[in-house]
Length: 188
Image (cartoon, rainbow, N blue to C red; front, side, top):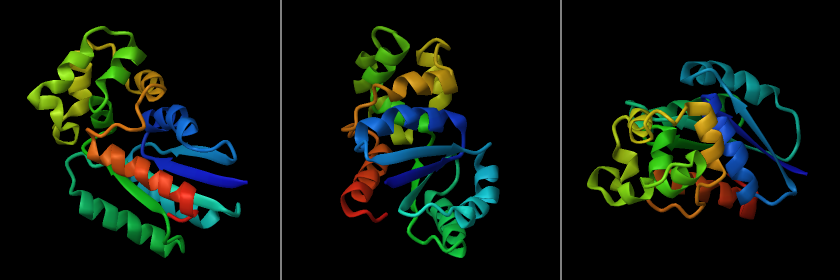
């Protein structure tokens, strides 16, 4: 059986992916999401996890928020950790700016998941058209949902409804396309 292991910097990404990835991947692929306790923990423990992984036919993905960093520097740093761990084929994806940017790319999923009416009408507002450019999407999401969005519980229910064809968030689209490439080719 093929296995996809996704390393995330936080629990909210893990629970979102646990509800999103089964809709994307065939059932013959075993999905395992591993959450770390922040980006520093991810970077500190990543080499240990990669070197210690012995299950054959495993494909690895790393998902990390950009936050205020330079995404090229972040990706280069993670790539060097993977290379040093003898796992050069790890798929590395950066959520620009934060995971919640992906939710702004599909406000219908947020509306359905959190059972809040009227959020989809905000999708066309200029400030939300390019979700990857929202400066602090987690704070903004709490604001538009009147604090009903909570990172872990919100991510769990929103992930069930996120459209796999969400074209608004470039970083989400890159993540989905990377996973699809693994499915088709078996390579990262």
